[in-house]
Image (cartoon, rainbow, N blue to C red; front, side):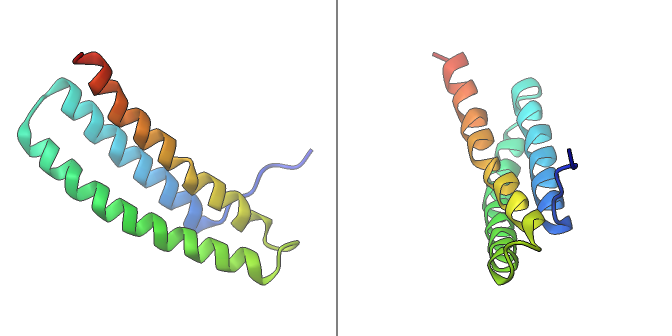
Length: 98
């Protein structure tokens, strides 16, 4: 069984978006400073743009030659995983405060 391969762009786009979002989320939960909410707002906008660019890059790499570029397809799935993670991060505070 072969190891799942990801492209460098997709792997880093997912990992750094997830890492920064998680740190901001934990900061908001435990520190509760307004500046973290402002930073999180701007981070979401920037992360959205970066992830869309990375996704389009991976999609184009995948479409060019599907059999050779399976890592691009895997990376597209990895980038799309940020969507349910973001929804989870939004829903948890709503559930905890109701």
